[in-house]
Image 1: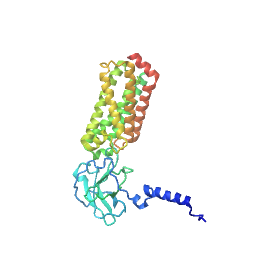
Image 2: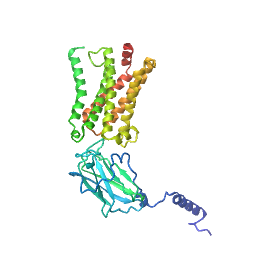
Image 3: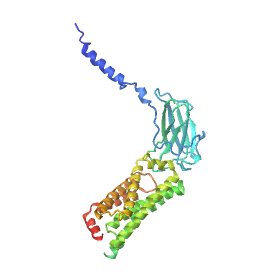
Length: 162
Length: 202
């Protein structure tokens, strides 16, 4: 007597469904989806100057740029990664050397660098960040402040091994 | 037209044109910009003001001008508009070359940029057409349709461009100027009275 719970029809239906989701990648672990690599943003690399020094803070400070750096896939926080930051601020244009600085992430993959207040330039109050070391793929970000009066801005990196 | 009415119209026009420039001159952002960048911004604001003069002239709304004078001033204002856009783009290019290259290639991250670039090309096309229409022997009707279509692109593009920008222009004066420029352009483009007027003056 055939089992009421497992007949040829249910076997085909569940087996087919499992194949369809599993083999096509529709059913992937939630973790891996959460940590897809960050793509560079349009205009992110504008006025980039390679090799800005690691600094305690850029200029006189008063504004905080912060964020996190994680590894693509498992999302592990990456320590000691160099993040370069520049913007049009109250103390200089994006192209000025003194508007550029870099900092390193801590054990939690977090970075935080004090810099002068960002002011609107080229139509939007925005900052630029770069991950440009060799270990992972280069990423340029260009976050926009929701208001020109904001005194902090965040940007997050998920890096793909190079 | 009574003198008082004429004076009031001229005064109101001067006010609508001057206030955005004065307000932009008082913008706190200027303190943190280099002279070239400031000049580029003002070239843009001036261009927006010139956009309002054009339909005013063609609609015959400015008192004391005869149709010939209106059209002559319209041509010179058009030339000034081209110059202001060239100065705007050149000044921005000197300030930040990669941002302007992105803009011209339609690869800019800012949503207002393509509107401005499209308006710029429509303006240049209008200028070229105005210069060559006799040589091309364009019929008046063809010229009128082409110029009107391009003018609508120029004004719409410039207005959206200006409104989406967080820049030196003060919001209320900017929106007033933009609304008036757009409304007058639409009137000049679609009002049968204006068309009749232009036909007579041709």
